[in-house]
Length: 383
Image 1 (tube, helix red, strand yellow):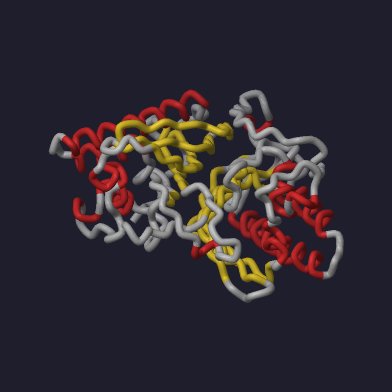
Image 2 (tube, one colour):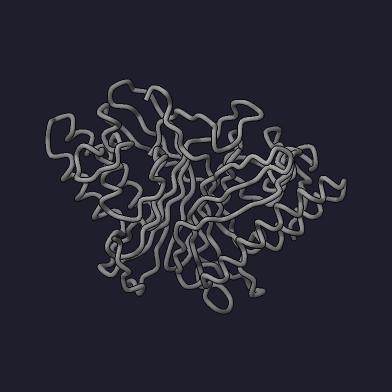
């Protein structure tokens, strides 16, 4: 049951690997379909509007939120990976009571987090509409992943805000499809200073393990440092990046859902050449995007280190999802930057585990209380 907060939630990050749980063996009933995903998205959007309406009418919006969350999120059934948009001090919400604090506000629940103004009621202004715009929906048997933008309309001002999302859906033991993964983020805004074919969906029979995830993360971090090193030595860093991307990402094998941190004009990169533009810069590839300065070389400054800090790793048999922060050290200035991530890993037909989902975002920073999500200015460097 999705209950209210009765004790002080712990913010300490945890890793959960459900090797002995039902989520590894497989969810109950039929596979998750595109229609299931759309239905949950419609229900989620409807719940946001309903909770705002009840709040405006001085009704029990907290109970309405609790009921909706119990229907829509898999708390109490599976581990839930939840990184809300406007959460800076407590980025991840693995517990139901932490999610409630975020949705209805710290003052409406026991031991709520002070940073939570109540997203479901828009801090008191309410939402009159919420519309999902799916960039892509990837079906993986008993799990489905959706990536895109959703648009929220303020019930008081009529202003619209765009937010990026990655959601994961899984069928629970009662047959209902619920959300087990939720990563939403403010679209990147540059500071003033600054054809994927469908592949055979049948992969190797071996399940993806926690060890597989850590291995790919280590290889990804190592590749970032190596590409920067080769660039600094005037070597062929573009080829190094292409080789690393072929080893680490599932382009050409599965559909890849990739939303880089510092991508504003071209938020999503479903094609390998688009990802290359992002990693090595628009000038280093044909038809690159002008906004790309080359993340893998840090715009020319390079990276000397990259460290993953997993908040949680969820193993879902044929895929695994990792959520957390990674920290990048500039090779020129020594400055460290923190970036939020959600990665999805899948075993390909050659037996190698590769990335099919990559959503990274700048950690939320409150600026002006009245600033809409779509206009927040963020300057932290990200992947």
